[in-house]
Length: 336
Image 1 (cartoon, rainbow, N blue to C red):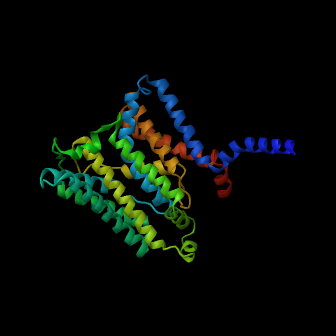
Image 2 (tube, rainbow, N blue to C red):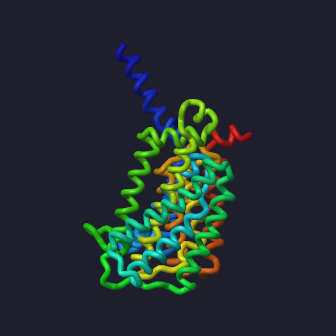
Image 3 (cartoon, helix red, strand yellow):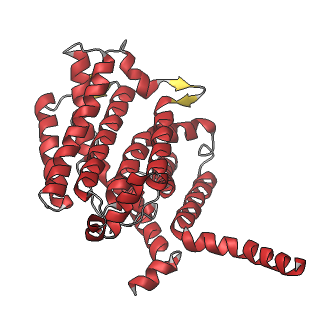
């Protein structure tokens, strides 16, 4: 009897790595890609592995982490939100105007910015969930409208934030040796992980992405859940916009251009399915950090900024291809 128990325990131990690779192959593959990028850039430049550089990477990638966490929920439902970059710019610019020209207290500005982002998300959610218009079309339209409003209110100029305002705390402060944006990013990631994996709302999000009609027939209010997901996305973009404005000391209508593509790339690179039904916050974290490491490493390697976007896009495409076609045989077999 003891021999049988011993053999069965050995079988379980041997099968654990296989089960881990089978069940979480996407996360494992992006983790390997992240380590590979770190090794390559550490060999190319001696400054890459310094603590100062890594704190800089974490601080600069915090807005990406925050919005990518919310975008994971959106994409898991089978949707997409292209308006996050424009929302980021509008909220950031209006925050600077509210502090500089209107003289509003920073807590009011912070709360108002989150509400404005939630309002933009609610507009997206209404037309997507209740009017049945495809998410790509709706958010593409709001991308243009919101960016236009940002240009209109700023007239194309950068709006400075008062140097003595406590608003800059969310972008420049350090707490126990860690940048405040990084702490906010970690907090949002933890909340997102708990919501998606351990709460009823997260199960609803996954169910809608897997089979929206089946979820509706099982009693899930699919329209309300979809609406909430886009509101969360808008509020995350607003928070990211205020963090960037606080860190740079000014708000501009040009902030966040192309940001939505980085966010979507981070989510998909982290193995969340673009077709919905599966999402992982841990994968999104690794995807966002991989993009940040690539950009930082290319800069430290003194590569021309004209090549940075080309190299970044190429590496991301190859990584996603590696993820879906080679290191994730389950999806490849299903697709074939």
